[in-house]
Amino acid sequence: MKLIRRIILATAFLSTCAIAQTGNVARTDKPWWNGAVFYEIYPRSFGDSNGDGVGDLNGITQHLDYLQRLGIDAIWITPMYPSPQVDFGYDISNYETVDPQYGTLADFDKLIGAAHQRHIKVLLDMVLNHTSDKHPWFIASAASRSNPKSDWYVWNDGADANASGITPFQKRYQHEGKVPPNNWESVFGGSAWQWVSARHQFYYHRFYIQQPDLNWRNPEVEKAMFASIRFWLDRGVDGFRLDAISTLFEDPKLHNDPELPGTNDQGDPNLRSQYSDNLPEVHDVMRRLRAVLQSYPGDRVLIGETYTPNVAELEKWYGGKEQNELQLPMDTQPGFGDGANFSANWFRQSLQMSQQVTGEPLIVFDNHDNTRSIDRFGDGAHNVARAKIIATLLLTTRASALTYYGAPIGMVTTTPTRKEDVRDPIGITGWPKQKGRDGERTPMQWTTGLQAGFSSAKKTWLPIASDYRTVNVQSELKDPESLLNWYHQLIALRKTEPALRDGTMQFLDNANNKVLTFRRNGPEPVIVAMNFTDFAQPLAANLASSHIRTLATTAPELQHATSIQGVSLPPYGVWVFKVDGAGDSAGAK
Ligand code: NOJ
Picture 1 (cartoon, protein in one colour):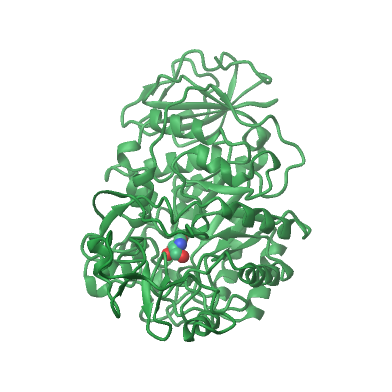
Picture 2 (spheres, helix red, strand yellow):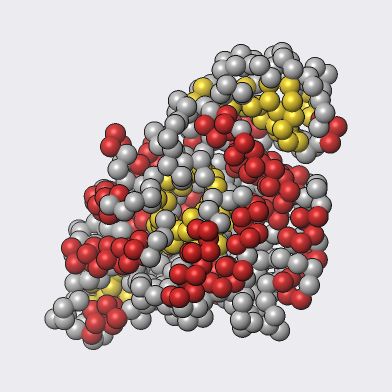
């Protein structure tokens, strides 16, 4: 099971709720991000302009026309700053320029200019929790206990190896008679504490050893990081996705995290991150950060990597009544399920929950840390049909939407089959239980040509997936039935149908576990129905009494339907239709 997914499953469980009508009242004067479609780009894998086998910024610029044609509103580029690339960019050694393998600052300026010309906003990834161990701040901090940066990271003397209460896990990490001060674990395996002999101390790293956690209790850290944020805001970036944001602070008393039964993929005891995650202090930083963004024109936006177990926890990230923290914390509940969850009831329930937040929901099914949704929700026989349902959930729900490169064409997870081919370090240390995240990071499939049109290099940093001759942009653009064309249609509808953009969301036919139906209200309501089974299914009889008009459907026979009477949804069929003259409340029971 994938790492991040394991974390979600450990904490997440949907609670039941039965509300029929949800969502904000009609929104006017919305900022650009409200209802927007965001598209995540993993720069190593999107487009390689210089033929070295690794994607780069100019490679993104070259493909902006495609993105404009797809109709997305914004791109989020995962870290492209200088980095030793241990965690492929999430270990940053300089926050204020571009890694030479991805290009230059001038290339970045060109990219942002070209994107803005096409009305595409640009978001960067901001990693506030940790830096690379090769960042000059850490190099200085690790050199001695008495340098100006000595308190910029989380240092500790450790505990006496023979002291009472030391766990067997701690004892595995003994240096000079000392062991880590508590049982905290790195998400990527092993103790979260690493010994540095120059200081005779341990430092804390929630992620890889090469990713030391910054000490956010030191005001100088915030000052420096906010300066870097301003650096990019001044260059015109439209916002940030905040990496691992819930882990900014740790319990100052360093209490042990409670142990849970069993061990994880890396063989370490399962823990509940009670004292190393989600400390309330992070919300003060979020409010101050939001104020920085608010001081710039143009509705700059903060998206959060917020894997929360329920909407009550998610709600905290919006900032309560003041709504002064993140505009778009990610709701990962509906999107990171798997085949066992592929039912109308499960999605109805989880989407009903999504609608409960006071701010704008942001839903997401795919990213660079999880098995692609086409594989997770697929059954092997109907994966593309199921992916069209996923696209519909993503793009017709009342929510902003976040997709990931490759998802709109149905790229699959291509996990290495041999340990020696793995690039993601957790796939090496965790093999064969944990094979890492390479599978969801393979190069974008543009064409049927050499290296799928991604690169002219003989060898690309990860191999091109073997299905590229059929799963690629070039072929799918030509095929009206393709997954890509389904994305095109749905994204276009978000722009032309005010109900899809602004309307409240009302779930219909609530006891039906086979067909999920909801209505987006407005002067011209839109009804969306999806058949989650591989048998034809009837629609609820009381759905709409008036004349209807198809806006989009995966079933050609429904294209010209004018009424729902006698109509059934074919296996995995999706139907998006408009009820003519239904006004604001008719037709929905
Ligand atoms: C979350 C990122 O999405 C993931 O790729 C990374 O490894 C960790 N944060 C650490 O930065």
